[in-house]
Image (cartoon, rainbow, N blue to C red):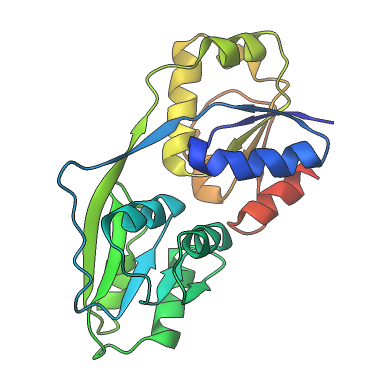
Length: 234
C-alpha cells in the first residue's frame, strides 16, 4: 500500500482516487488548480466541423455552454474522451496521447476544406495545436472559455501529512501543476521533507517543470495517459 497525494482538480481527482483506493492505496486529494468558467463565456458551434478538446476541463466547459452534442469530439486522451461521452457527446474519438497525437487524429478524420475546427481551451494550453494544424491547411478557432487558477498555498492537512512523512507519492499531470506544487511546497518550508516521496509525472515536460525541487525520485509515465501513470504506482 502507498500513501498517495493527488493534485488534480476535484472533478478529475475523484475517478483517479476511486481507482487507487480500489487498488488498496491510501489517497489524499489536494487540488492545485481550480477551474473557473469565464464571465460571459460563449461557444459558437454553428459552422464547426469538429470540436477539439485538450482536457476534460474543456469538455465540461463546452457542456455548460452549448446543448449541441452531434459534432465530432476529438480528444487528446482517453480520460478526456471519457468525460466527453459522459457529457453526452455522441461522436467521440481519443488520440490516446498528447497534442501531437491529437493533430494526427484530426488530419486522419477531418478535411481542411470541411469547415473550422473549434478548440475549446483554457487561458493556458500546452503545445501549439493550432500552429500544427494550420500548417496542414486547417482553420482552427481557439475558444478560451475558462481558466485554471493555481492554488496560493498548501492546505494544512497536506502540509501536516508531508511534514509527518505520511505521503509516499505525489501525482502530477501537467507542467503548470508541477510548477505550482514546487512553489507552494518551498514556500511552506517543506522542500526538505520530500526525500522519501516519489513524484509521479505524466510526461517529461511535467518532470522538467519541477525544477530543482528536492525529492527522492521523479518517475515519468511511459506515455501521457492516466493508465500509464497508474502503472507507475503498480
